[in-house]
Amino acid sequence: MRTESLMMSPRHRLRLAACALCFGLTSMRVAPVAAVDGHANGRRDQKLDAQLRQLVERNDDSPERVIVQVERDALESVKSLLKSRGDKLIRYHRGIAAFTVQSTHLLELAGDPGVKSISIDAPLDASQTQAPFVTDQVVRDSVSVSGTWTGAGVRVALIDSGLEPSADFAGRIAGFYDFTRGGVATAPYDDYGHGTHVAGLIGSSGALSGGAYAGVAPAVQFVVLKALDATGGGYTSDVINAVEFATANQAALGIDVINLSLGHAPYESAATDPLVQAVEAAVRAGIVVVASAGNYGRNPSTSVIGYGGIASPGNAPSALTVGSYMTQDTVRRSDDRVNGFSSRGPSYYDALAKPDIVAPGYRLIANAAKQGTLYQSYPTLRVWGTTGDDYLTLSGTSMAAAVTSGVVAQVIQANRSTNPTRGLPPNAIKAVLQHTAGLLRDDAGAEYDALTQGAGALNGAGAIRFAKGIMNASPIGAAWLDMALSPDAGSSAIGGETVVWGNTVVWGNTVVWGNTIHVNQPAWANTVVWGNTVVWGNTVVWGNNVVSDNTVVWGNTVVWGNAVLEGNTVVWGNNDLTGLTTGNAALSGNTLIDARP
View 1 (tube, rainbow, N blue to C red):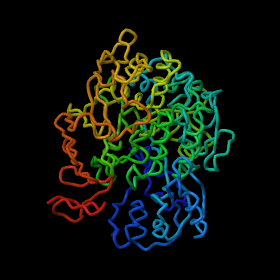
View 2 (cartoon, rainbow, N blue to C red):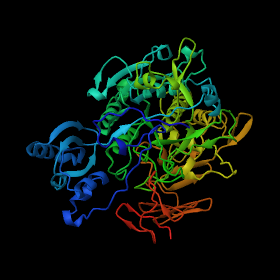
View 3 (cartoon, one colour):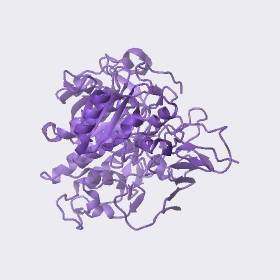
View 4 (cartoon, helix red, strand yellow):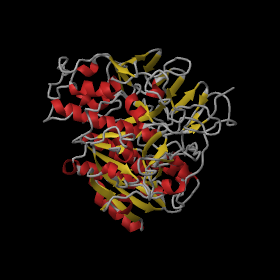
């Protein structure tokens, strides 16, 4: 597959360290982060993320754009401190109690007791790859969605590069806010094209293609929150602002789902990552957040598949994190394969099992933004509709997340048809999609491990049928699936094949199987973090894999603290560790050392 670089804005000096969630035309690398002596700095550096600790180690005192999270009772004192230091205040993030500032002398700032953590305002990118033709009909049939459920009455907040209006979205853009310009309400546009393509997969009507390239939920409405610019890049702080805006205005704008087909390389634990914290707050507010897993599944130098490449905010515990598989242009599931570029888990710093599921994300056709950079610069990506080349072909976990958001909209609509006064919580929707997913197998016939495919491949029809039968108002501890209304058959017919539901729910490092989802329990509420909060027993056995104490064993991959070992080799995202120090596996902070003899 031929690859070529997209345009990049020179303003982001860390752009090459960003994690592009559509399969990149550029081969991006995340540099291993060296350990910094916290004692020498009174442990103030421990409030800094890994990228900032590198800068401190190099004695780089140049101004950095950072996100400073503070104790809520110290907001005013920290604000005064920032002003007295001459740091430039860029914006305030109310939901996570943080400031975005241009700052120097980060260790001095970290020494203030009111400062909780300081994170780089990391650049985010969305880049794409050219791919051969495939029809959206295959995608819709392969995830086995039903034409009865169109996403009507459901609103998706699209946080991306925008949305270019066309007949395919007529009357369904409920609002447009430009966060590359501070969140101003304006007429819809997309000067890059990624957002328009994502929106098309979620819910294009297909009017410009005679229905051939309709999205999964063609009646869904969009609240568009533009956070990426004409190069497909943006700042984490802009995305945080967009997420917080969606959360604060959830009721006023009727937002049910947030789609985040973007991200950056992780530099810290999910517990302090500011974008992750904004996502967690959105889920607690009752919004389903769908995030791309990332495209760090394969080393760009060696093409070897690796683990631990989940991007932020895909590492958010409560997000519905989606990897990518290819349909092979057929409806049947038996020939589907997980894409090599799709990021494998676990999440690097926290060792949480990700992705949650996988969905079609390879060679997908959806709407083009004709005024956008992609359309103008890459004519080979264009696909003809009924009146012109109104569509583009793109691949990536961005696309997989979009397909999943469309199915989530259908699931919400189906559940509301039997529960008009009480919605299904995001955690429950995530569990339903995992429970009904079907496991995929590789070329040798072996099931992909759970860190590659999560709970399995998205099964729209199964999830819709299951969600329709849930009685949301059932008390905690009571069975809430109405078997007469929607029996749990445990399988679906897709492409002439029987796809057995995985019946597995992954919660952080805890695995639950069987009929757990048949019962309403605290785990499905919004207030419970989808991480290590809920434990069913002390030891989880997943096939031959055992989770015990601080060691997590997934097949041949061992997760030990912050280290990911594939065989005897430590792997971080796409980094080639060839030539590094050998010997026994050595870990110093976040330094990764090849352990081959």
